[in-house]
Image (cartoon, rainbow, N blue to C red; front, side, top):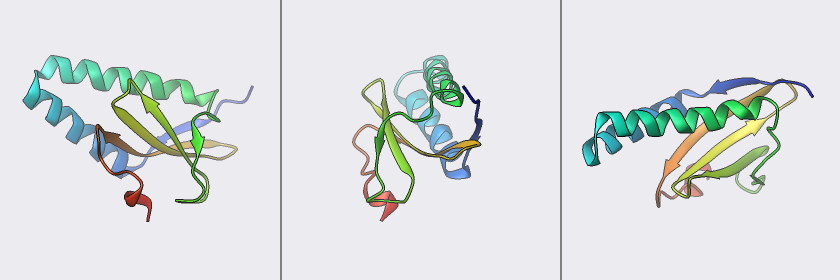
Length: 100
């Protein structure tokens, strides 16, 4: 099996920062850090098993969507060499319109 490089788009990095800030406000810094760590550990496994989730070519060519712990929607693309995480949507955020 071929390993792919994992890349976080600037928008995805911003989403994780905002999510950390939101969870910190609602709970604590330690809880937020643990949550982000779990998300990043989940994403680290995409290097070998990237063809997961649902294909959403109707929103953007090559777009794939997968859920994490029933609260996060992860939007990403996959090619032969790279998995690019585009966005992380929390809770009820309207992720469909983000790709219109």
